[in-house]
Amino acid sequence: MLESLNFHFEFYDWLLVFMVTALGVFSAYTRDPQLKAVAATIPIPCGFAYIAVGLPMGTANAISGFMCLLYVHIVRILHYKVKIPIIPSIAAGLAFFVALGTFLMPRIPDGEPYFIGACIFDFAVGVILFQTQKYKSGVRYKTPLPIYIKAPAIAGVVSGLMVIKRLMGGFCTSFPMMNSIVSYESRFSLGDQCRQLPLFLIAGPFMFAEMRYLEIFLHLNHWIVLLCGYVLFAAIYWPLNKELKRRNALATDEYSAQDSQKTTSKT
Image 1 (tube, rainbow, N blue to C red):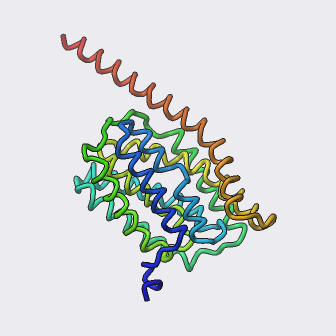
Image 2 (cartoon, one colour):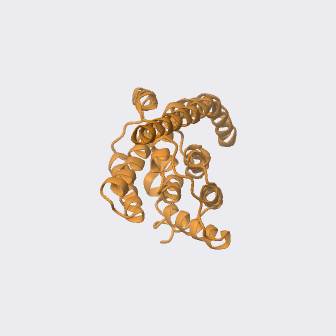
Image 3 (cartoon, one colour):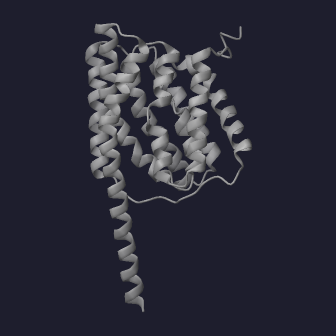
């Protein structure tokens, strides 16, 4: 009965809990809001979820990357625009992801045209957003809680989120476990988290495609497939992240210059 309720954790599930908790603790104690956002978009939890689920990369994986983008914007809008507290905002975003993923999972075909089409869609959305979104450095903040309180709290949240892992099937690999932790830790700078997701949408499809076809055609071990995926993802993500930091810094300098001009004109 416990297994049917997804309360039975296997080795890879516990490994995933450990990795997400470690990244969550990192995001809690780093002040840089952009680094917090990086922690939410590097595919370490995604990769370990892939190992834990044991399913090949498919259309659901590509679609779930876009769903993560929707999740972070839902949280941002609810918290900043609607003025809902951060925890209910995160809960609403997670509920949206789970509801949509549960609805789509039995209905998404997994043929090659659908998979490639979803990857192209992700890539196109990522490029468009990366080129058109507004840039600004966020608020620097780290948790005041001691680590012996914060780490168990994060581990408890992650363990609770793991309960629905198998319910999500292929969507689990991009389920916003890490994003939900970072959303809370970045509650003063959710814009940074939203600006970071297009990088995942650009680099992720290449990783998904490489992992899928290495597994299908070469029948490689899942760990080797994952390592190859990480290498390709990093090769694309790293320069994009440097460019994102440059744009954030440039935008911040421009805002500062405008503020200085306004102050000077008033005096």
